[in-house]
Image 1 (cartoon, rainbow, N blue to C red):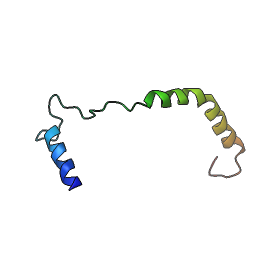
Image 2 (cartoon, helix red, strand yellow; image 1 turned 90 degrees about the vertical axis):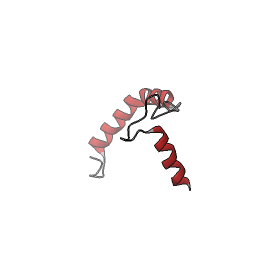
Image 3 (tube, rainbow, N blue to C red; image 1 turned 180 degrees about the horizontal axis):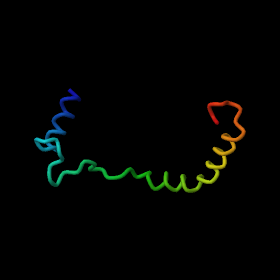
Image 4 (cartoon, rainbow, N blue to C red; image 1 turned 45 degrees about the vertical axis):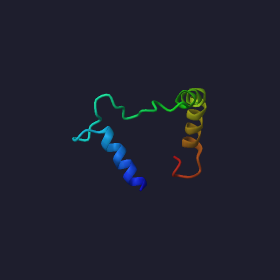
Length: 66
């Protein structure tokens, strides 16, 4: 039943060629709300993450890390 509902929804949003119908969004809810928070965290920890990766690359005991 769930699969039938998904197929029905997709058929109403897509045209006969599989493209989105005019005026219909492929992502009606927009971007995830946490995207800005994730980007901020990435900016905050970038230099520390790079330093950690370099340290592991140079001093890691496990060959798979280097």
